[in-house]
Image 1 (cartoon, rainbow, N blue to C red):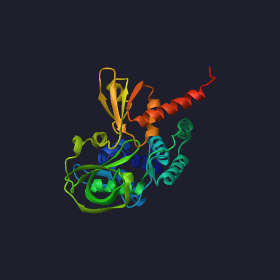
Image 2: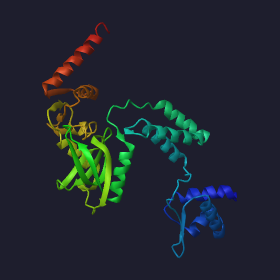
Image 3: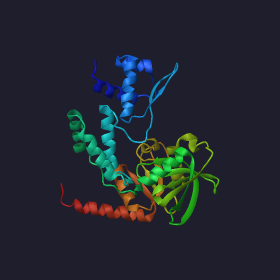
Length: 321
């Protein structure tokens, strides 16, 4: 028989694993009388846990959101997942959450049992995040736009396009997509009567939420990630790089995400890669890191950058065995 305090923790842990527990089933799981369970539920409510009780044939208990955040019960795998996520967030692409992520991680590790703390220490020593190179977005902006997507509220904001031109947009947000380096908002734009994608790091100032809007069927059959990938591939503007990669398109599509470049098959052994040249030095590094034979068709500037990089490498290898 569990002690009263241990049983309360067990009740709390079980309540957080389901959206609803039948009273009899929960009492049976805890091996207590239903009256004892009701007393335990009352004690948890007194401690601030928002537990809803319902009566009748389908009656039972459910953990509901409250006015404050009570302590959560996490198993070993959940605690490890949260610790990893917090560490990634501290060095991620969302600005404004680094310090709070570290504070939360410290609190979590302080109460971890030694077996978990050793596991997290091993992960910390083995995982080294790369230096952040892409644009960052404000955490408050993400929270505001996420709420607009969830509650179906119009959002207005100032937006800079790829050429630096600023406009005011009023849209109906559908969802947020993270490509690995950038955050995008997918939204219906009434002024253009079409779906649009917006780079969130190009939103100037704060977004203002407005009236409710009627829901629409999401673009891309509901797969917003695929929709954004297709939109990015179709929106390559200005001077383009065209590079023949000496590998089939099926092979390279597993290594090059659609958000980075558009791949087209040439034959069974080669494919054509098309992408923008706004970060040509990064493109040079990327091509070298692919470890695939390639041929640059254009632009000539990319050929020049690659030749200069090759000459530097050749000089560094002079006299080496």
